Image 1 (tube, rainbow, N blue to C red):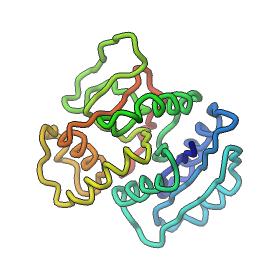
Image 2: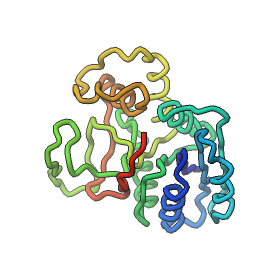
Image 3: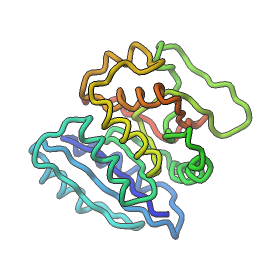
Image 4: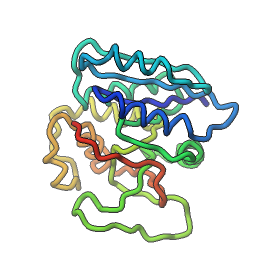
Length: 228
């Protein structure tokens, strides 16, 4: 299987460097072919950030930089990055304010091998909720002796899709641009504006009765920087 890690950036070179440094320090199988793509939305800082990325080492596959001539905004940018999976078997997506564990990729591979066969599963989370996003209350999933649990709650703090998973969402996304109210989607999600790609992915999961795999122990976290 051939995979790709996509780091999404805009105008924060220090954030991109920090995210990359956590990715490059992680453990990867010796024979695994994994490309690393940096996708930069138009900000006027692309040349500076691209020059910085040129000094980044990557031993597991190709390193690429994608720049955009016009400002895309977060939703369109994320959707375009997800569609890069067409050239791969699976994709790991990290916005630039994410830091990953050194064992995140070992979890990623095992989760793909375990759950790809189930059509109800449409995503793999690297993050583990400590606060339930629909009501802001402390959240502790009941432990049943496994490594993961399933939720109909999506998140954007480190996620994985196989080609099958992403294409199923993308097909739904293209046919729901008006975003009529999906079944069982929490009311708070409607407060997200049109820039939010997660609004659409959450709508897809709830309306189509799909699930995401979440780990009991997080393999990513967010640095809480101000952004879009």
